[in-house]
Image (cartoon, rainbow over all chains, first blue to last red; front, side, top):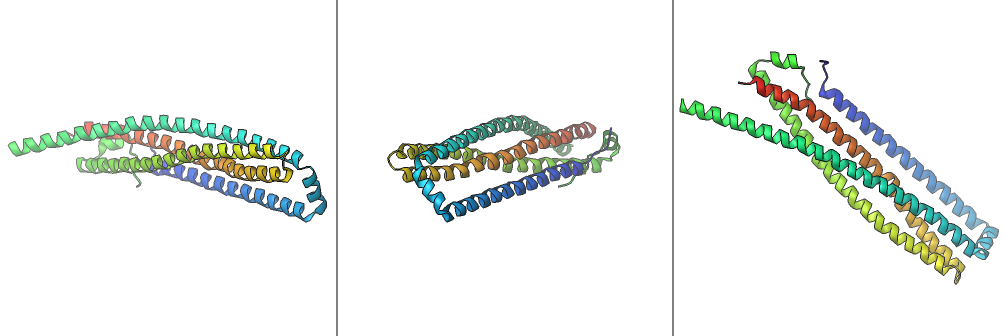
Length: 126
Length: 134
């Protein structure tokens, strides 16, 4: 049987945490870039009189376009939330397995305690 | 808490006192993992509440967008502003749903599965120790 240590397992968990950190970093970079593009667009639009006039004269069309973008975003969000729901399900199943493992641990410990109690009882009788 | 996983042969060679000490170490490890999972449960419950809140918020955002579309024939600029507000709120909630909860949940699932594997490793060793102790 190969010799493994829990240290190695813990190192693997550490790598997982590092992955989480880099994912978080990428996410904040994406949000920053989106905000920067948004601010630049707003500045351009507000700074350009012709663009403002054009927007005001075609407000209804713009509303419809923005509304369509909103609908796409709603669909995307719903999809993401459904993925999260399936992950909750997966977590619950994994947790149920773990609950069985904890129950087994408790039973084993209770058995050990009984043995210790019996040994002590025999010793005091003697 | 760092515990070395001994092989079956190594465990069988351990003297009684070392065997008892090793059993205590493994039990402490099990307790540490149980505490880790409990805190993970709290985090997952928080994420679930947050996801439910996002569902509600997205409903409100949809209503604002719809309001903007209805308002648009009456007042064009008013409709644009309302739809803009709806889109701004929606973007925030989409970001939360897409990047917030999902990543954390994936990490939590992986962690729970890893803990199960580690507990299985500790389990058969403890059973062996139990059989070796008189």
